Amino acid sequence: MHRYMSRCDLVDFTDYPFNEPPFVPPGTTYQYFPENKMLGGLLHTADYCPMYSLIVVEGDKELDCEDPEINAIINAAGVDTFEVETFGANSKCFNSNMGRPLCMKYHCNAEQNQVQVVINASHAVTCPYDGAMMNLPWINKDAKFECPKLATVCPDLICPGNCSGRGY
Image 1: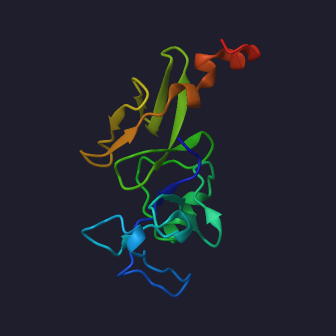
Image 2: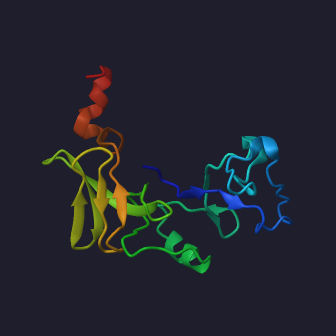
């Protein structure tokens, strides 16, 4: 789970504008897709290997899930948002099968020792275990998000007070 939203930078260089910035298609050494030799990542310094890169909107502003003002900015930039997304305090990026991560609020449920992801004012989804793929029928019947590691997002549930510096 992360704070900033990113997306895969895989592009088809046949359709990609080469003027600003100047992108050059991958050479034969760096063609990883035999069915389309013009596919590759944007960074030549990464040997055209596709990777997740930050989504930047409005000048140099990055898509920060914790920024409460980002919703209006990304809509103006033409980036679609989903009704389950919330931007602001306690929001993070959750991996999804929707083509990009989703910004959603969460809280740590100490009674259940689990992460709960807030879908809207009346719904929360409880993550049963790390990495569980949870349904999001509010988007569509196939939409899912990945539950984060409990120890990462709710460390006090695993080791209160950061284990008082003793590691247990």
